[in-house]
Amino acid sequence: MKSERRHKTTRAVVAGLVCVLAILVPLCLARAQDQKTKGTTPSPEKQTDAKSQTGPVSQQAVTPQQPSRQRKLPGSEVEGPVIVNTDLVTLTVTVTDNYGRYVSGLNKNAFTVFEDKQPQEITFFSDDDAPVSVGIVFDRTGSMGGDKIRRAREALAHFIQTSHDADEYFLIAFNTSVQLLADRTRDGTAVLNQLTFVNAHGNTALYDAVYVGLERVTHGTHSKKAILVISDGQDNSSRYTFSELKRALKETDVVIYAIGILSGSDAGSDLGMGGQAILEEMAGVSGGKAFFPRSSAEMDDIFEQIALELRHQYSIGYKPANFSTDGKWHRVKVKVSPPRGLPRLFVRSKDGYYATAGQR
Image (cartoon, rainbow, N blue to C red; front, side):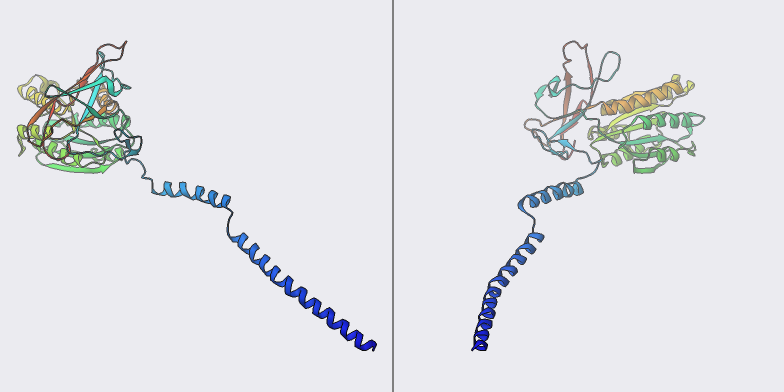
Protein backbone atom coordinates (compact mmCIF):
# COMPACT_ATOMS: atom_id res chain seq x y z
CA MET A 1 0.00 0.00 0.00
CA LYS A 2 2.78 2.36 0.90
CA SER A 3 4.62 1.33 -2.28
CA GLU A 4 1.61 2.16 -4.42
CA ARG A 5 1.25 5.61 -2.76
CA ARG A 6 4.97 6.25 -3.33
CA HIS A 7 4.64 5.48 -7.07
CA LYS A 8 1.59 7.77 -7.39
CA THR A 9 3.48 10.61 -5.68
CA THR A 10 6.49 10.13 -7.94
CA ARG A 11 4.30 10.14 -11.05
CA ALA A 12 2.62 13.36 -9.87
CA VAL A 13 5.97 15.07 -9.26
CA VAL A 14 7.27 14.01 -12.69
CA ALA A 15 4.10 15.22 -14.34
CA GLY A 16 4.44 18.54 -12.55
CA LEU A 17 8.05 18.91 -13.63
CA VAL A 18 7.09 18.17 -17.23
CA CYS A 19 4.43 20.89 -17.11
CA VAL A 20 6.86 23.37 -15.63
CA LEU A 21 9.47 22.56 -18.28
CA ALA A 22 6.88 22.85 -21.01
CA ILE A 23 6.20 26.40 -19.84
CA LEU A 24 9.75 27.50 -19.05
CA VAL A 25 11.59 26.18 -22.12
CA PRO A 26 9.61 28.23 -24.69
CA LEU A 27 9.98 31.31 -22.52
CA CYS A 28 13.73 30.85 -22.23
CA LEU A 29 14.07 30.28 -25.98
CA ALA A 30 12.02 33.41 -26.74
CA ARG A 31 14.11 35.50 -24.33
CA ALA A 32 17.35 34.21 -25.84
CA GLN A 33 16.13 35.07 -29.33
CA ASP A 34 15.10 38.52 -28.16
CA GLN A 35 18.53 39.16 -26.63
CA LYS A 36 20.21 37.96 -29.81
CA THR A 37 18.09 40.33 -31.88
CA LYS A 38 18.91 43.25 -29.60
CA GLY A 39 22.59 42.44 -29.83
CA THR A 40 22.64 42.71 -33.66
CA THR A 41 20.10 45.47 -34.35
CA PRO A 42 20.93 48.97 -33.06
CA SER A 43 18.30 51.04 -31.36
CA PRO A 44 16.73 53.93 -33.31
CA GLU A 45 19.15 56.33 -31.61
CA LYS A 46 22.13 54.23 -32.65
CA GLN A 47 20.80 53.93 -36.18
CA THR A 48 20.62 57.72 -36.40
CA ASP A 49 24.18 58.07 -35.11
CA ALA A 50 25.43 55.53 -37.64
CA LYS A 51 23.88 57.45 -40.53
CA SER A 52 25.29 60.76 -39.32
CA GLN A 53 28.77 59.23 -39.15
CA THR A 54 28.78 57.62 -42.61
CA GLY A 55 27.20 60.58 -44.44
CA PRO A 56 30.07 63.10 -44.22
CA VAL A 57 32.65 60.41 -44.98
CA SER A 58 30.84 59.59 -48.22
CA GLN A 59 30.56 63.30 -49.14
CA GLN A 60 34.26 63.88 -48.55
CA ALA A 61 35.12 60.94 -50.79
CA VAL A 62 33.26 62.43 -53.76
CA THR A 63 34.04 66.12 -53.22
CA PRO A 64 36.30 67.43 -56.01
CA GLN A 65 39.64 68.66 -54.74
CA GLN A 66 41.27 71.96 -55.55
CA PRO A 67 42.22 73.40 -57.98
CA SER A 68 38.78 72.61 -59.47
CA ARG A 69 37.36 76.09 -59.38
CA GLN A 70 34.11 76.56 -57.46
CA ARG A 71 31.96 79.68 -57.37
CA LYS A 72 28.47 80.65 -56.37
CA LEU A 73 26.16 80.46 -59.33
CA PRO A 74 24.50 83.79 -60.18
CA GLY A 75 21.31 84.22 -58.18
CA SER A 76 21.96 81.11 -56.10
CA GLU A 77 23.35 80.33 -52.67
CA VAL A 78 24.52 76.89 -53.85
CA GLU A 79 28.13 76.59 -54.85
CA GLY A 80 29.00 74.87 -58.11
CA PRO A 81 31.28 75.01 -61.14
CA VAL A 82 31.22 78.07 -63.37
CA ILE A 83 28.93 77.49 -66.34
CA VAL A 84 29.67 79.58 -69.42
CA ASN A 85 26.67 80.02 -71.69
CA THR A 86 27.06 80.98 -75.33
CA ASP A 87 25.26 84.28 -74.72
CA LEU A 88 27.27 85.23 -71.61
CA VAL A 89 29.91 87.88 -72.22
CA THR A 90 32.68 87.70 -69.64
CA LEU A 91 35.15 90.48 -68.88
CA THR A 92 38.34 90.51 -66.85
CA VAL A 93 38.56 93.94 -65.22
CA THR A 94 41.50 95.62 -63.50
CA VAL A 95 40.89 98.65 -61.25
CA THR A 96 43.69 100.97 -60.09
CA ASP A 97 43.98 104.31 -58.32
CA ASN A 98 45.98 107.41 -59.25
CA TYR A 99 49.19 105.74 -58.08
CA GLY A 100 48.67 102.55 -60.06
CA ARG A 101 47.78 100.53 -56.95
CA TYR A 102 45.22 97.77 -57.36
CA VAL A 103 41.82 98.39 -55.80
CA SER A 104 40.03 95.31 -54.50
CA GLY A 105 36.92 94.85 -52.38
CA LEU A 106 34.50 96.74 -54.64
CA ASN A 107 31.03 95.25 -54.97
CA LYS A 108 28.94 94.67 -58.08
CA ASN A 109 27.03 97.93 -57.64
CA ALA A 110 30.23 99.92 -58.17
CA PHE A 111 30.42 98.77 -61.81
CA THR A 112 28.39 99.70 -64.87
CA VAL A 113 28.76 97.89 -68.19
CA PHE A 114 27.76 99.40 -71.52
CA GLU A 115 27.49 97.51 -74.80
CA ASP A 116 27.17 99.73 -77.87
CA LYS A 117 26.42 102.56 -75.41
CA GLN A 118 23.49 100.67 -73.85
CA PRO A 119 23.68 99.76 -70.12
CA GLN A 120 23.66 96.04 -69.37
CA GLU A 121 22.58 94.06 -66.32
CA ILE A 122 25.51 92.35 -64.61
CA THR A 123 24.51 88.72 -63.98
CA PHE A 124 27.84 87.39 -62.75
CA PHE A 125 30.41 89.05 -60.50
CA SER A 126 33.47 87.79 -58.63
CA ASP A 127 36.62 89.25 -57.10
CA ASP A 128 38.09 85.93 -55.94
CA ASP A 129 41.83 85.40 -55.82
CA ALA A 130 41.46 82.55 -58.29
CA PRO A 131 44.21 80.60 -60.08
CA VAL A 132 45.08 81.39 -63.69
CA SER A 133 46.07 79.40 -66.76
CA VAL A 134 49.23 81.22 -67.87
CA GLY A 135 50.99 80.87 -71.20
CA ILE A 136 54.62 82.05 -71.32
CA VAL A 137 55.70 82.91 -74.86
CA PHE A 138 59.48 83.24 -74.71
CA ASP A 139 61.62 84.75 -77.46
CA ARG A 140 64.81 82.75 -78.13
CA THR A 141 65.81 84.40 -81.40
CA GLY A 142 69.12 85.95 -82.39
CA SER A 143 67.96 89.43 -81.37
CA MET A 144 67.57 88.15 -77.79
CA GLY A 145 71.27 87.39 -77.48
CA GLY A 146 73.69 88.67 -74.88
CA ASP A 147 72.23 88.76 -71.38
CA LYS A 148 68.60 89.38 -72.45
CA ILE A 149 67.53 85.77 -71.93
CA ARG A 150 69.26 85.54 -68.56
CA ARG A 151 67.60 88.76 -67.36
CA ALA A 152 64.19 87.59 -68.57
CA ARG A 153 64.54 84.20 -66.87
CA GLU A 154 65.48 85.81 -63.54
CA ALA A 155 62.52 88.17 -63.74
CA LEU A 156 60.19 85.30 -64.62
CA ALA A 157 61.25 83.62 -61.38
CA HIS A 158 59.85 86.62 -59.47
CA PHE A 159 56.56 86.26 -61.34
CA ILE A 160 56.23 82.57 -60.43
CA GLN A 161 57.08 83.25 -56.78
CA THR A 162 54.33 85.89 -56.54
CA SER A 163 51.67 83.93 -58.47
CA HIS A 164 48.86 81.78 -57.09
CA ASP A 165 50.03 78.35 -55.93
CA ALA A 166 47.48 76.61 -58.16
CA ASP A 167 48.36 78.47 -61.37
CA GLU A 168 49.12 76.24 -64.35
CA TYR A 169 51.78 77.08 -66.94
CA PHE A 170 52.35 76.54 -70.63
CA LEU A 171 55.84 77.37 -71.91
CA ILE A 172 56.19 78.20 -75.60
CA ALA A 173 59.61 79.13 -76.93
CA PHE A 174 60.13 80.40 -80.44
CA ASN A 175 62.67 81.49 -83.04
CA THR A 176 62.12 80.54 -86.68
CA SER A 177 59.77 77.80 -85.43
CA VAL A 178 57.61 77.39 -82.32
CA GLN A 179 58.34 74.81 -79.61
CA LEU A 180 56.05 73.72 -76.77
CA LEU A 181 58.49 73.14 -73.89
CA ALA A 182 56.01 72.67 -71.03
CA ASP A 183 52.34 71.76 -71.30
CA ARG A 184 49.88 72.26 -68.44
CA THR A 185 52.15 72.10 -65.40
CA ARG A 186 51.98 73.69 -61.94
CA ASP A 187 55.69 73.18 -61.37
CA GLY A 188 57.16 76.66 -61.79
CA THR A 189 60.67 75.39 -61.11
CA ALA A 190 60.38 72.95 -64.02
CA VAL A 191 59.36 75.83 -66.28
CA LEU A 192 62.41 77.85 -65.24
CA ASN A 193 64.67 74.83 -65.73
CA GLN A 194 63.51 74.55 -69.32
CA LEU A 195 64.96 78.02 -69.92
CA THR A 196 68.34 77.34 -68.32
CA PHE A 197 70.11 76.20 -71.48
CA VAL A 198 68.11 78.09 -74.11
CA ASN A 199 70.30 79.49 -76.89
CA ALA A 200 69.41 82.62 -78.84
CA HIS A 201 69.49 82.06 -82.59
CA GLY A 202 67.29 82.19 -85.69
CA ASN A 203 64.55 84.49 -86.91
CA THR A 204 61.41 85.62 -85.07
CA ALA A 205 58.02 83.88 -85.53
CA LEU A 206 56.35 85.95 -82.81
CA TYR A 207 52.81 85.96 -84.21
CA ASP A 208 52.85 82.20 -84.76
CA ALA A 209 54.06 81.67 -81.18
CA VAL A 210 51.27 83.81 -79.71
CA TYR A 211 48.78 81.82 -81.80
CA VAL A 212 50.08 78.60 -80.25
CA GLY A 213 49.87 80.22 -76.82
CA LEU A 214 46.24 81.20 -77.40
CA GLU A 215 45.34 77.69 -78.48
CA ARG A 216 46.95 76.08 -75.43
CA VAL A 217 45.72 78.57 -72.82
CA THR A 218 42.16 78.63 -74.19
CA HIS A 219 41.92 74.93 -73.31
CA GLY A 220 43.50 75.44 -69.87
CA THR A 221 41.95 74.29 -66.61
CA HIS A 222 41.12 77.70 -65.13
CA SER A 223 38.58 80.22 -66.38
CA LYS A 224 41.02 83.12 -65.93
CA LYS A 225 43.59 83.06 -68.72
CA ALA A 226 46.63 85.17 -69.54
CA ILE A 227 49.74 85.12 -71.71
CA LEU A 228 53.12 86.66 -70.96
CA VAL A 229 54.91 87.61 -74.17
CA ILE A 230 58.62 88.09 -73.50
CA SER A 231 60.20 89.46 -76.67
CA ASP A 232 61.57 92.50 -78.43
CA GLY A 233 58.55 92.39 -80.77
CA GLN A 234 60.55 92.18 -84.01
CA ASP A 235 58.65 89.55 -86.03
CA ASN A 236 60.14 88.52 -89.36
CA SER A 237 59.24 84.84 -89.83
CA SER A 238 55.54 84.17 -89.06
CA ARG A 239 52.98 82.62 -91.38
CA TYR A 240 50.23 84.62 -89.71
CA THR A 241 49.92 88.36 -90.14
CA PHE A 242 49.49 90.84 -87.32
CA SER A 243 45.94 91.59 -88.49
CA GLU A 244 45.04 87.91 -88.22
CA LEU A 245 46.55 87.75 -84.75
CA LYS A 246 44.58 90.79 -83.59
CA ARG A 247 41.37 89.20 -84.85
CA ALA A 248 42.17 86.02 -82.88
CA LEU A 249 42.85 88.04 -79.73
CA LYS A 250 39.51 89.80 -80.02
CA GLU A 251 37.72 86.45 -80.26
CA THR A 252 39.13 85.13 -76.95
CA ASP A 253 39.08 86.22 -73.30
CA VAL A 254 42.86 85.78 -72.92
CA VAL A 255 44.68 88.83 -71.52
CA ILE A 256 48.12 89.59 -72.99
CA TYR A 257 50.96 91.09 -70.95
CA ALA A 258 53.90 92.00 -73.16
CA ILE A 259 57.37 92.58 -71.74
CA GLY A 260 59.67 94.19 -74.25
CA ILE A 261 63.28 93.12 -73.64
CA LEU A 262 65.16 95.93 -75.36
CA SER A 263 68.79 96.93 -75.27
CA GLY A 264 69.99 100.53 -75.32
CA SER A 265 70.38 100.53 -79.09
CA ASP A 266 66.95 98.93 -79.68
CA ALA A 267 64.97 101.69 -77.98
CA GLY A 268 65.95 104.44 -80.42
CA SER A 269 66.04 102.43 -83.65
CA ASP A 270 63.21 102.15 -86.17
CA LEU A 271 63.17 98.39 -85.65
CA GLY A 272 63.01 98.78 -81.89
CA MET A 273 60.25 101.38 -82.06
CA GLY A 274 58.28 99.14 -84.41
CA GLY A 275 58.64 96.23 -81.99
CA GLN A 276 57.36 98.34 -79.10
CA ALA A 277 54.32 99.43 -81.12
CA ILE A 278 53.50 95.80 -81.96
CA LEU A 279 53.70 94.70 -78.33
CA GLU A 280 51.63 97.67 -77.11
CA GLU A 281 48.86 97.06 -79.64
CA MET A 282 48.85 93.31 -79.01
CA ALA A 283 48.40 93.82 -75.26
CA GLY A 284 45.89 96.67 -75.64
CA VAL A 285 43.56 94.65 -77.89
CA SER A 286 43.27 91.97 -75.20
CA GLY A 287 42.73 94.32 -72.26
CA GLY A 288 46.29 93.80 -71.02
CA LYS A 289 49.34 96.02 -70.91
CA ALA A 290 52.85 96.30 -72.35
CA PHE A 291 55.98 97.08 -70.32
CA PHE A 292 59.48 98.10 -71.38
CA PRO A 293 61.87 97.78 -68.44
CA ARG A 294 65.22 99.58 -68.64
CA SER A 295 67.04 97.64 -65.93
CA SER A 296 67.04 94.23 -64.27
CA ALA A 297 65.53 95.68 -61.08
CA GLU A 298 62.72 97.33 -63.03
CA MET A 299 62.08 94.07 -64.88
CA ASP A 300 61.77 92.19 -61.59
CA ASP A 301 59.25 94.76 -60.33
CA ILE A 302 57.21 94.51 -63.53
CA PHE A 303 56.89 90.73 -63.38
CA GLU A 304 55.80 90.92 -59.75
CA GLN A 305 53.32 93.65 -60.69
CA ILE A 306 51.75 91.44 -63.37
CA ALA A 307 51.44 88.53 -60.93
CA LEU A 308 49.72 90.79 -58.38
CA GLU A 309 47.38 92.21 -61.02
CA LEU A 310 46.21 88.72 -61.98
CA ARG A 311 45.35 88.12 -58.33
CA HIS A 312 43.41 91.40 -57.87
CA GLN A 313 41.12 91.36 -60.91
CA TYR A 314 37.34 91.30 -61.13
CA SER A 315 35.34 88.90 -63.31
CA ILE A 316 32.14 90.41 -64.67
CA GLY A 317 29.53 88.72 -66.85
CA TYR A 318 26.35 89.87 -68.55
CA LYS A 319 23.88 88.63 -71.13
CA PRO A 320 23.27 91.16 -73.92
CA ALA A 321 19.67 91.89 -74.79
CA ASN A 322 18.62 90.44 -78.17
CA PHE A 323 21.90 88.59 -78.55
CA SER A 324 22.53 86.95 -81.92
CA THR A 325 25.59 85.28 -83.40
CA ASP A 326 25.88 87.77 -86.25
CA GLY A 327 29.68 87.86 -86.16
CA LYS A 328 29.69 91.65 -85.70
CA TRP A 329 31.96 93.62 -83.40
CA HIS A 330 30.22 95.00 -80.29
CA ARG A 331 31.96 97.72 -78.33
CA VAL A 332 32.00 97.33 -74.55
CA LYS A 333 32.89 99.89 -71.91
CA VAL A 334 33.17 99.35 -68.15
CA LYS A 335 32.83 102.23 -65.71
CA VAL A 336 33.40 102.22 -61.96
CA SER A 337 31.98 104.58 -59.35
CA PRO A 338 34.40 104.86 -56.41
CA PRO A 339 32.92 104.60 -52.92
CA ARG A 340 32.63 107.85 -50.98
CA GLY A 341 36.01 109.06 -49.82
CA LEU A 342 38.04 107.36 -52.56
CA PRO A 343 39.66 109.34 -55.39
CA ARG A 344 39.07 108.68 -59.06
CA LEU A 345 39.57 105.06 -60.13
CA PHE A 346 40.78 103.71 -63.47
CA VAL A 347 39.42 100.65 -65.27
CA ARG A 348 41.12 98.44 -67.84
CA SER A 349 39.41 95.61 -69.77
CA LYS A 350 38.69 94.49 -73.32
CA ASP A 351 36.86 97.08 -75.38
CA GLY A 352 34.56 94.68 -77.22
CA TYR A 353 33.88 91.24 -78.66
CA TYR A 354 32.78 89.50 -81.84
CA ALA A 355 29.31 87.98 -81.48
CA THR A 356 30.17 84.44 -82.52
CA ALA A 357 28.90 81.14 -81.17
CA GLY A 358 30.84 79.61 -78.30
CA GLN A 359 32.64 80.95 -75.26
CA ARG A 360 33.78 84.55 -74.91
